[in-house]
Image 1 (cartoon, rainbow, N blue to C red):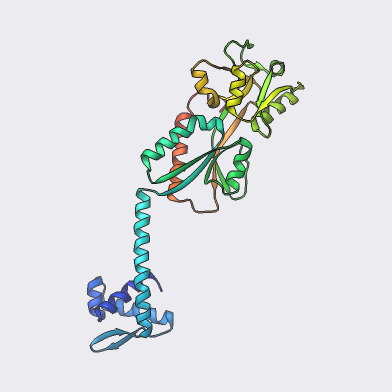
Image 2: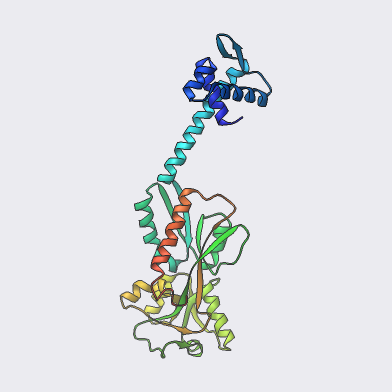
Length: 305
C-alpha cells in the first residue's frame, strides 16, 4: 500500500465509478482497476463492491477511506512544510565555540542568521576549549567549533583553520625581537587560563620540552580576567589574536609571536554524523564555513596556517 494507491482509492470511492475516477486523475481506467486489485491483494480483503452501476466501498473500504483521507492530508501538509522549510528554515540551532573565537565570529554569525533566516532561533554557547568536544559528543549542541578535534565515533569534523597563539602584553612591556624565544618566555611573569585548557597545556608542554621552568604567576578562568590582569601590568598571557583583537586595535595591548611549534592550534567545525541534519542546522553550518572563509583571511588570525 502506498500513497498513490490511496489517492486512486479515494477518488474511486468519491466518484463511485472507476472510469470517472480515471478521467479525474488523467489515468487510464485499466491502470486504476489494476491498482485497486493490487491494493485489495496487499490488504487481503475486499474493499469495493463492483456492479454495473459502478463501485461502492465495503465496510473495510469505508474504514480505509476515512483513514486514507487523513493520511493523504498529513502527507500533503508534510510536503508543504518541507517546501516552506527549504525556503525559510525553522527551528532552534545551538552552536558552541571557545570564547576567543566567539569574540570574532559570534556577532557576525548572529547577524547573518537573523538577516537571512529569521525562522532560525540561534543559541550561541561560549565554552572552555576543553569542554567543546563533550558538548557536541553529548548532544548538547548541534554544531561546535572545537579546538584540536580528534576523530570520534559519531562526530564529523571539517578543519576551519590553524590559528597562532601569541604572547599578549601591555603596550609598554619590553619584549625581545620577534619571534620570542621559548627561553625568554620562561623568564616572563605568566598569567594563564585555569586548567583544563588547551592553551595552558600547550604552554606547559612547550616549556617542559625546552627544559625550561613553568612558573605561573596566577591563573584566571576567563579571558576578561586575563586581560584585566595584563592591563594592570601583573603579567603577560598567551592567547590567539581573536581573543584580543578589540584591545589590540585600541592599543590597550600588544602581541608578539613565540618561536615554538606548539604555539598554534587547529579549529574545526564538528557535528553529529549519525543523524540527518535539519535544514536549519545545514544553513547555520554553511554560514559558519562562509564566515571562517572570509574572516580567516586576516593574517593575524591564520598566521600559523
